[in-house]
Amino acid sequence: MRSRTESDLDLLRVIEALEALVADPALVASLSKDEHVRLMAAAGRLSRPSKIERLQISRKIRKEKHRRVIRADRDLPRQVDGEVIAPGRELTVTVRPGALLVRVPGPAPVRVAGPALAGVPGPA
Image (cartoon, rainbow, N blue to C red):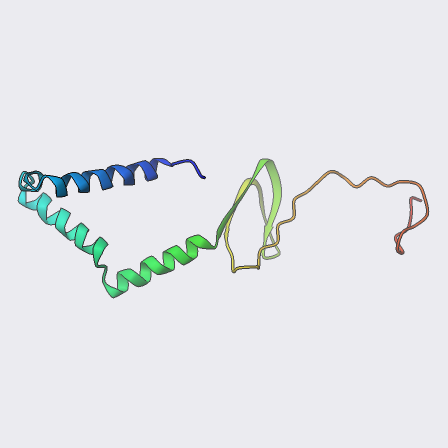
C-alpha cells in the first residue's frame, strides 16, 4: 500500500467537509452568496461533468496511467527514443503499454580466462 501524499490528505479533508455540510445544512446557509454559488458549481461539475470535461478527464487518466518515472541515486547518461539527453537522476516518460525498455548500467563485465563461448573471443 502506498503512503498518503499531501494531496491525498487534502482530498480526505474535502470529503470530510462535504460530509459535514450534508450533516448540518445550516453550514451551507452560513456561506455568502458568492461562496454558495462556487460550492454548488464545483459540486455540480464534479458530479455531472460536461461531455468535454469527461473527455479531458478520461484522457488525463489514460495518460497518467502510462506515465513512468525512473530514478537513480546519481546522475546517469540517458536517452529517449534513441535521442541522447543530458545526464540526470530522474527520467519521466509517457509510453504505450509494452513499449518501454529500461537499461540500467551495471558493473563492468568481468572477463575470465578460458575457452571462447558461443563464438565470443576470449581475452587477448
